[in-house]
Amino acid sequence: MKRAKGNVLTNSDLSRYRRQILYPSFGWQGQEKLKRSHVVVAGLGGLGTSASIYLACAGMGHITLVDCDRVELSNLNRQILYWDEDIGEEKPFSAARKLAKLNPSIKISPLLERITQGNVRGIIMRADVVIDGMDNFETRFILNSACVAERIPFIHGGVNGLIGEVTTIIPGETACFACIFPEAPKNKGVIPVFGMAPALIATLQVMEVVKLLTGFGNLLTNRMLYIDGEGMEFTIANLAKNPECRVCGGSES
Amino acid sequence: MSIKVKIAWHLKYLTDGRGLVETEGRNVGQCLDNLEARFPGIKKEISVRQKELRGLYQIFIKSTNSYTLKLDSPVKKNDELTIQFIVSGG
Image 1: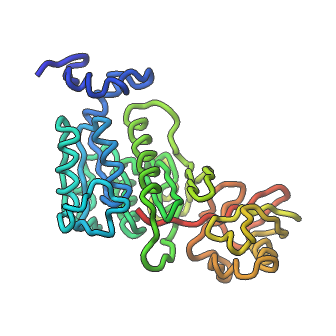
Image 2: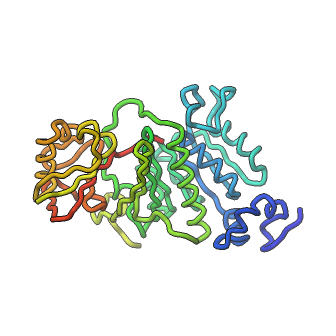
Image 3: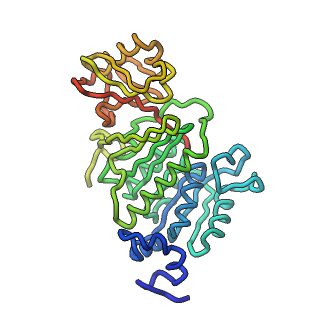
């Protein structure tokens, strides 16, 4: 296969990604960085499936897809990598099969596992970034602690109904997830979600990943972007490290 | 002292649909007490217990997060409180 530019991108790559390579702050150097990068998508629900599609389209060199569930009918209003024919299939493998067709030039690693304290470091160890696609605080706390320990950026997203939130956590630099949320909320029962909410938040998460990995633009660091789709209001809250944080202790190094 | 409060969408049913209301107080707890007097049920909804907030909402002062926020946290003139729903779905 012919190589071009920095000897990382093929001519096929240059054609596939032409429209983003044209972006001045990104260029072929940015595309090369993406091709060398590894993103872990933790959770393959509404957030994770939407994020995975845009990561694959953007040319992320290696995507690890982690989930422990099988596809259910009630997933299909928002988890857009799964179709009616996939019901009962293991999510990581169903998602990987579609993404491989979407972009055969990238590496996709499906992982059928529940993320726990015991396996989390092994799952995220070689990642450049972790995307939060979880649907519960307990696993987010596990991921956050591991990301802080391994100094891996963690792009948090969350949704409920038509509202959502996103922030970029960089260990040692920003407030971590446990600074922002010292404890889990007392949610009860099944959470309502329209598909548009996780799709919107997930694309913002991927936007953060692309900028973070290639070094341009402003990140949502120490800021939480809130989206209210019903009122159509987008607001930002400033976040600060908690000096008494049980995970990062507000540390700077 | 008048303090503006941004109301989370989920709570607007308690504030006659208003997203921005005014209350009074010298600390967060007093502001919530006065808010409760105008809009009964709001304190229960955001799970105010004793000196802490526990539950489904966070309160920001001047759009800044509130890891140390207690109900006796002081507020000043022109401060704005935001009651923000905590989302956990994915």
